[in-house]
Image (spheres, helix red, strand yellow):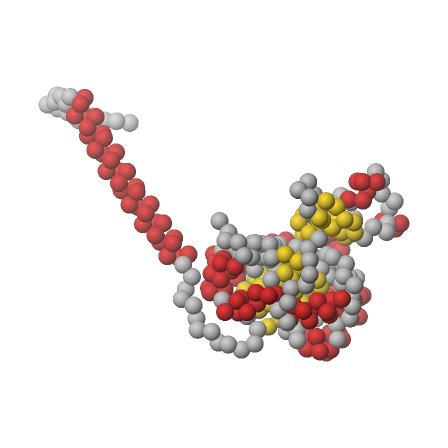
Length: 339
């Protein structure tokens, strides 16, 4: 409503009223611009990483992540001695296979040197079996876990919105698919109860340096990995052949394909799910010295999704520890400045 109190019946020309309107709008716009600028300055100050802490030196820690237990069985004792942590994706092995192997690894690594990883992707049809597997492993005393999505927090009995409750008996870390490509995202993940986070293999070195400057102890860098390009719920071979022989009669492990852009892709079958991988593995092992200078103290090599010859994994591990890139690898966006 607009109420006008004008007992003397004064009159103002439209030209003057228009000028008053223009002056008022100009003043409001200036105030709005100043308020916006002040708000943006505050956000920028909050986004700036803290001053880099002086380097403490010392040896960097190394971890390996696998989804097949035979890779670990092929590792010689001296290779296991170089590992500060072993991360095992529990998707492929059965509970019995895990419970048979884990005690031996515990003797070699100690309980805190073994972390069990929840699947990268879990559908509702997988939930009951996955919950049972987690319950049996937790019942056997395994308390170090890794999650790859918000679903994982819930599977471990956590609410992502409130973080770890007091006296929570598990240690939780977050793998790279939990978005971690800016400092505020990393801080949010840590507030949700994760002790550590793996930086994305899709990230670039310049951005990694900023994250490491802010959270060197919490951020780990993956130096080798077969990063999934996409995951499909349909079987690539069944689609091509026009039918499925049934899971009990299926011998499909992997097949080579070419994308519309001419890229060589390997389609891997995992429990009737197709995982597409670049024929070249991601690798930035030769950049470990630069990453150390930037503050990185945690490095990890992943052997998952692709079916390696078990005896080839120790050789690849040795190359990576020597800072050498195996043939047929790529560095993704590592050397590219991200927009």
